[in-house]
Image 1: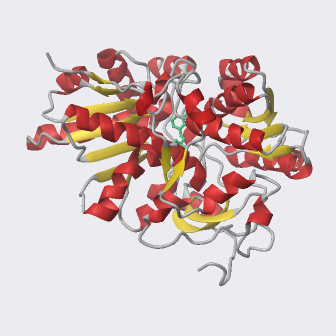
Image 2: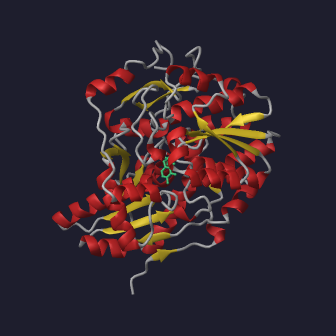
Length: 456
Ligand SMILES: *Cc1c(COP(=O)(O)O)cnc(C)c1O
């Protein structure tokens, strides 16, 4: 009988994170200070992040040891299973072999605890009392709430207002793990108040919520800020996914021809892709990498590679990335975790150099793929994850047309048990597909910072 699930025991949880900064074709452009637009040093980031996190952010060491306390928490759900989607293959009648790495088995239901636990640990070790953050769909907020709870830290979450209303149970989950949750934009911060003054009915966006969380950390000695995606250290923490997957693909006796992941800020994609990417950068492997995004927030497929602010209120560091502009407010699609205007600088640089392809889909075909996955493999995917599933299905259908038995690996970033309202809307035919005109996109792109000669 065909083996479906490839499992590793606890001892195979990786002991190091893989830092792709050691193997990039060239160094990353420097991070700039949001006010001076000059290269930012550790002292500029110290009000926001603990020193070890800052060190990791700029490190070019290839491997960084995972603290035993962090591995101990990882044991609650890692190593995660790698599964061959044989029932999906059969339904598609494809010669392709489809594998998925199931990060949905974590207590919060996604890959995000992989970095939340690490960040909470480093904050605790430095004596920090409270962490502030933003959350879109609530996946990141709930992951950080859980991690803070394990390490005895307070957790303050600004949740994008549209998600706060659409996803009340993610809010409950955060509160159950002890976090305090506020819909954003709020009147608690200067950033929130100025957004509300301009538009009292604002739905909120990740960029706005980041501004609020950063402000709280910058103004309180005992509080630091934590980001669930985009930054170099976050993508590095997620490489436990790809390292385990490499070992599991070996157990399966196969090599992926293509590695697929959905992209919001790029962390689950970087997590599964980078350990495989190392072999492309260093050993001449020819693996393809496909990043999948929504057409309603098309940073990679329609954005520009440029310096931009990480947030709407221009308080977060300025980084070089694929961006739609920090003032871009995406439509309220159900894949809330993919509604970020920018993209991880590491992933952006690799895409610009041709190592990563990107593709964008509307939400209706994405939900159609999600339903097919649920009906064949049984698991209900998060709407974000369904973007990767849609791309894997399209790749498998191309294999059917050409007769190629390609090996496809995608990251199953999370389950959709808290997204049933979105599935209801899809099944009732109530989801709308949003696509922007060039003119609409050029409006927010016209507001990129003028960095002059800095860091070019
Ligand atoms: C947050 C989230 C994403 C998108 O974030 P990345 O940093 O791009 O990984 C994707 N899938 C799920 C389930 C999420 O919770």
